[in-house]
Image (cartoon, rainbow, N blue to C red; front, side, top):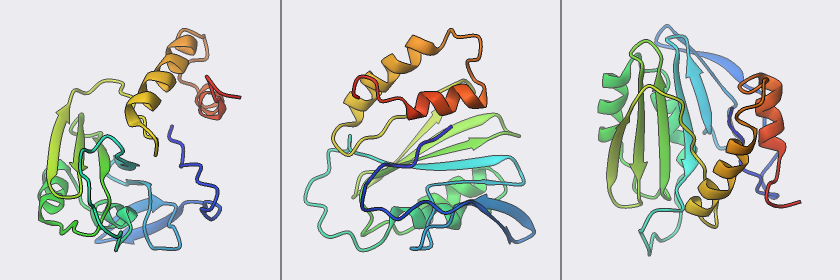
Length: 176
């Protein structure tokens, strides 16, 4: 499960739509900007975009493009190799820092690409349950607090079910 950010000035999220690119079916909720924050394709690949407040980059200047444009550009590719190659060729100038998580089901690989505003980074992760947290104030604080909220309910019998994930995402522990 993934939450869209809760920026109050952001337009209401649009429902996902099915598109086709080069014979591959892709599904994502397209934002008015043309971008997306999450998408999957018929190959079983998933991409999710998170803002990266943990980046050490400063003086990023003015945002000239939306980070969400990376997902429609990449989700139509068939596998990790093609996605990774294309990502490393992309011009990301003008985009604020982000983390892009890629789950490649047929290859059983999870990757995280990072853009800190000046340079790209790449992490290969094990094929295991992972959690990512993002906050415009502090990614590390969000990870700490939301990680605690997750651990508090991880042992429940319904853990992992759709209802359980939705309830977890609606919770505001430690807040109201």
